[in-house]
Length: 102
Length: 102
DNA sequence: TGCTTATATGTTAATATGTTCATATATAAA
DNA sequence: TTTATATATGAACATATTAACATATAAGCA
View 1 (tube, each protein chain N blue to C red):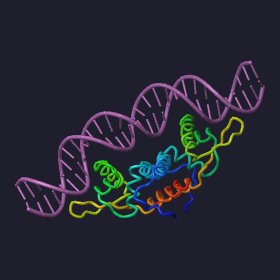
View 2 (view 1 turned 90 degrees about the horizontal axis):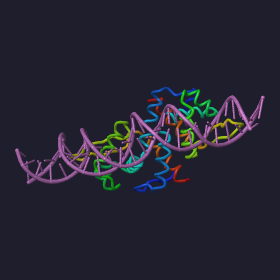
View 3 (view 1 turned 90 degrees about the vertical axis):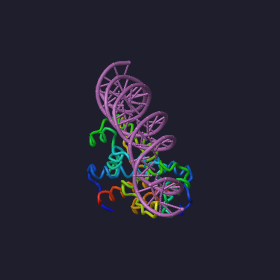
């Protein structure tokens, strides 16, 4: 690991880190990402599985896509979403693991 | 790492994970925690170093302390704060490292 | 006790966030 | 081209969050 020991973080890093953690700091987004651990998933499938409205899922997916945390691929009219940042997904896994032990 | 592959997270884990990430999702709190990487620090020292008002620092420290992310020790009238969750601090370090490479 | 320093707390105002509803867009099939 | 299905978008609303100010509390010392 790198030496991040300077007294204050540079503003760009600070922005990225806070944005990314903010993305992970919402139950709905966590549930969506957790579902995508297993396999890629369409918007409707996510909405049905988690019992969340389609528009809510779509809004949150856009949020996650803007941060490049997920990506999608089209098949006909269906969009399949999947994770697009392995490292962040690993951090999420670690936090879930940590929390489920406490 | 444990097998967190069930379709949905249990609500308690979900709550803890989202709360913890939410705590890390704010620039001020990140700066405070980052400062505490190096050494324990008094409230005023944090406020001076980061140029944040004392009351703001105190509020954020209370927030972090409620989540057991920091602890303190008293020396006279001074309270020294330090990290209290090694695992979460490691995740923060990893994210900073990740972000500063991107 | 009264004074000083360090920290905590209550309140408020501005802003950000998350969800919903209604509607728009895009693709494919009839 | 019409229709159906899947997804995205915009506006509105309620709630949450953040920082600031003023003030309170706690500890040590003259």
